[in-house]
Length: 328
Image 1 (cartoon, helix red, strand yellow):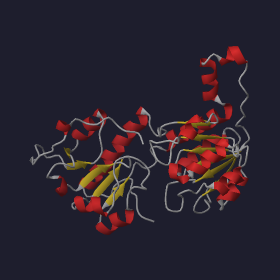
Image 2: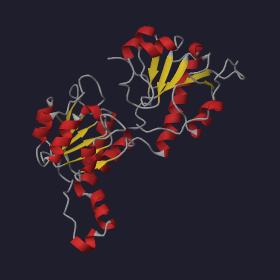
Image 3: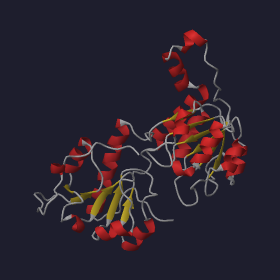
Image 4: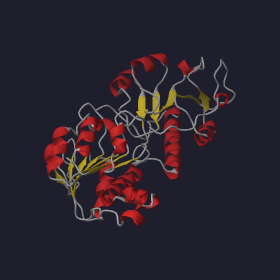
């Protein structure tokens, strides 16, 4: 997961200090960049986990990269009544426990969806047209010594199966319509508002697809949802793209299938044990790898800051958070 530059220790009270302003107190449970720090300091009195006053604060800023919200954390901060997560994924939050304790949970809603969808299509084009590998080929002087680089495949008209047609999956599908792709999808249930074909079984979806795009949330049900059987159903000409969560794919099995030519290629922005990536995966030439950055653009981060602030402002004025997350 992306690591933001840490704040300086002096920026957030760490001792038994009384607030110096009437701004609402906010517990910060993740590192902050200068931009975050400046925006939050203008609206709130910030406290770090080491402050003795932290246990009495009612609202906290969290991140899946740094925090696991479980009974132990909630016991540590018993006054918490609002958690705002700086990402969209909430697999690190025990939503049932938060509900039981009366803790509101918010994330950034659909802020990231368009950026992630753009990135997914970029990864797909890169893998199919071999853009990154062609770049290396030219930079290494191989065009001169070996001639033209092997051709890639076109994206237009391909059959694309999307695993998880939420806000991100829907945005990906919309972009792929411009390439005249034939889109099918798997979700918890069929969506009557879309015209794409619903396939309720993932092996069937893979068998009916040239490309499988994983954009689902990580849950107990979706852990390793892409396994050996799914990859075999995708087949030797199949491409897989993952911009969801690394653990949605059985990573050792994916490495084996790629190495043995049982699928054609992959574009991966997420991994099962980030930031650690299997050496065998790094050595493969039919894979494009990026460091879990599909959501991050300066524009998106500015939006995220404002949404987080708006959620806290709603909470502190007695209103419901604006982008709530609730247990199913």
